[in-house]
Amino acid sequence: MNLEEQKKAVIEKLIRERYIKSKRVIDALLKVPREEFVPEHLREYAYVDTPLEIGYGQTISAIHMVGMMCELLDLKPGMKVLEIGTGCGYHAAVTAEIVGKDGLVVSIERIPELAERAERTLRKLGYDNVIIIVGDGTLGYEPLAPYDRIYATAAGPKIPEPLIKQLKDGGKLLMPVGRYMQKLVLVEKKGDELIVKDCGPVAFVPLIGKEGFPSTF
Image (cartoon, rainbow, N blue to C red; front, side):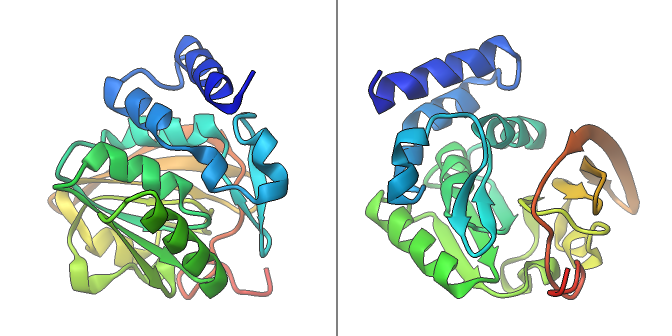
């Protein structure tokens, strides 16, 4: 099978296994070329549903995890979304497809080389609704707050307080929490109340930063 056939096959499998179900998420995963975001020597594995190394100790998330996170966040066209951990830019591209031209993805990456590479790929593919910031993602990005949705692609010891503050009332935040035993946590902000849901065990790289783990983790 060529890459396009592999992509369709893996997405059909994710639909059968109920990781993804909404048309918006399915269409986004079909549209985004994951092979453009992985290192050249791993291109043939672009549609194997597993994390892949992208350098600097970081990974591109498995396809099912990206799809599942998009489903849990209930992303809609026109939303402003904050992503913590750009990595190679694949997850941001899928999110950008869903929120559309009237939406915005603000993505923070602490490793400049990854941020630059992701920005080149996203621009090449025409994603002008993604802004990439080099910085400490655990502090969020106050200048463009508040956000309809916030998600992190790395696991922190807790949900950083700045992210809660930058989330709109009625907004949703999704991130992995934990060190060795991690769980995916969904938070919905309702006024002063936070509704927290455990979405199951996961395995992510550590979230490094002032409100995350130390860089010596």
